[in-house]
Length: 292
Image 1 (cartoon, helix red, strand yellow):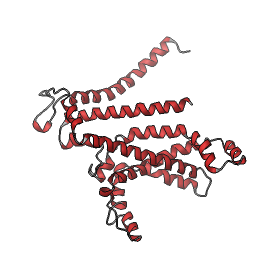
Image 2 (cartoon, rainbow, N blue to C red):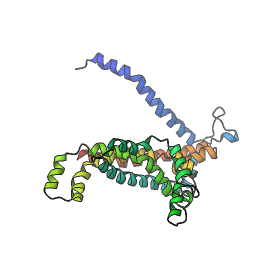
Image 3 (cartoon, helix red, strand yellow):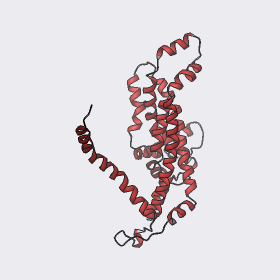
Image 4 (cartoon, rainbow, N blue to C red):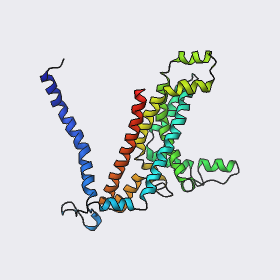
């Protein structure tokens, strides 16, 4: 049992890390809150040294009343939901396939996981110039091969294209987590069900899928946290046009393009609130699954 002296020493050694972590989180959050209640336009001469005019909730009302706000929230939820559906469904199927013994299994697993290590900016450039270009892209050549007119993906199906690009990046992560989970499945249980005459779909629905419940929950939780801040793929491919302007991209435009830091900070607070609402909702799901 640890003595009082040992516990005090442990707290003393942990204190610098805790203070650093709190400062790391609280300083940016405090500054964002402060800026959101002020008028801060650097291009018009506003500066912290000269003092920033206090405007109360004006930035919040203006950001919320913007015609771009609700479409950006809708685009954010649509992209996040689309990516989650694709990655979870395909991740489960890929995990089941990769769990089967076949020649070259190790190489195939590495190739499946490889896209996760590609930088978002690079993958967006590859998809934009090599795959979705309406003139020289691989998909354009494929369309012409079947006598079809090539599609201008990033303008005619912009949201679907962003979902496809981001799903390609995050599918390896989901596959890896689900493959690890499926490898811990009791094989004797599956063999017993097979000997009792249970069909393949019944074994998947009543044995495999419930076993993957916790892993799917973790995949959804982690991916959602990162997908809410998706930016590089939109910046490189559509620049926020054609209905792909998410809440993160709208904040970027307010801060960088419009040089309105107060308004962008108010948008940042809204983004924090949205992320917390989604996180609380997901944590409830996680809690229910873990309690089973």
